[in-house]
Image (cartoon, rainbow, N blue to C red; front, side):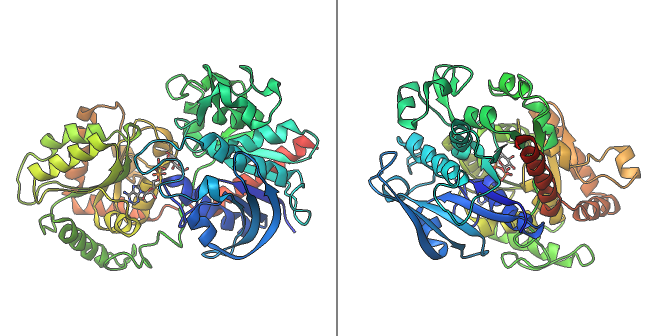
Length: 491
Ligand code: ADP
Ligand code: GLC
């Protein structure tokens, strides 16, 4: 049997998803299994996760911990992919309506400290071989602040022989809590001070992952470099620089079982690079569904995103009036799917009301619609202020939808700007802009429209994009090599 790997995370597609983290946790385990690893997950017992577990058996009763009266550890298989998963079933902490982190009114759950400390605690004790005598991992791989405390709990009991890897999916979400609650974590005081979990007078779960893991990764090489700078470090750049040589970037992949235009049950017609007719059918269907004018020649931009300041969507709102200048007939169209910040939602809805037939907005979270948007659009806008990896531009490339991205984070690693040289060398896959200004975005949109009006050039970009291979196999190989290096350093 290969290396035993325990992945700890708070969300997993298709059971619970608030963003790209779920897509990654949904795809990485199978890719690691295909590469020869023996993989299990440990997940919080959110209602949909408990419901998605098949053939579950009780591994052990944990009793009353972290404020829950009853915690049961179950092991079963995820019904959708057969991967083995431990589920921390603590009904009092996890079974509630709303998303994993927030109530339906958008406020953070007041007991998030206990909810995610428990996840980390269980992961660490599984890793120490204390909870399941039949399976002990070699490597514990924790994702984002939600699982980061696992690294502190492992560090608290050195000698277990386990290696820990911590992956940052987004440094901006850090899991900050009151220092007064440190005692609830059950850690010795030495874990607190500024060289521990203390961060500007608060407790930081993210810091537990950054300081106490054997290796830190993030989801693109460029973001790995950026987070060591003050501009992108969210106050933690010093902590990251202190771990020089142990922080690296491994690019996310695309799950071809979920995102494949040749075989996607959600889209109006299938298509491939060799038979693109279906893409025009998808475009017409999207225009109809969104209430846009049925104009095959109009360049259709799409945006599928959480509406937060990270994503640079204010730039789109500012660039829009200029982009919509020129002929109404056959002119630029914009389809937006996004939810989050109420002000951004309102601003996009107002833009749609002001430009009926040319700007359309859907503010619901809807997975099948995201597929139809990405399949039906001509170009995909991702103007982020920062972007650890970004998945929508990867999905767009695969669906022959040309990405227009800001030159930042993983966007810069995954899109090749259509400069004259790149076009001549047939390497170009999209368009990029540098400064986070509506002017720079507007120029890039104009450049995109110009290219769209040149069918041979556009076809070249579409086909080069579709030929990209952002496969999870490559990422899995890189994670396995990293696990191995971390383990060898331990023993
Ligand atoms: P992030 O994780 O920062 O939100 P990513 O680009 O990595 O950014 O991943 C976003 C994921 O969420 C993609 O799978 C995208 O399709 C999906 N998504 C974002 N907004 C919506 C929405 N309103 N409905 C459905 N899917 C969405
Ligand atoms: C985060 C990042 C995004 C990344 C995703 C999956 O949510 O914001 O850039 O693609 O995690 O790693």
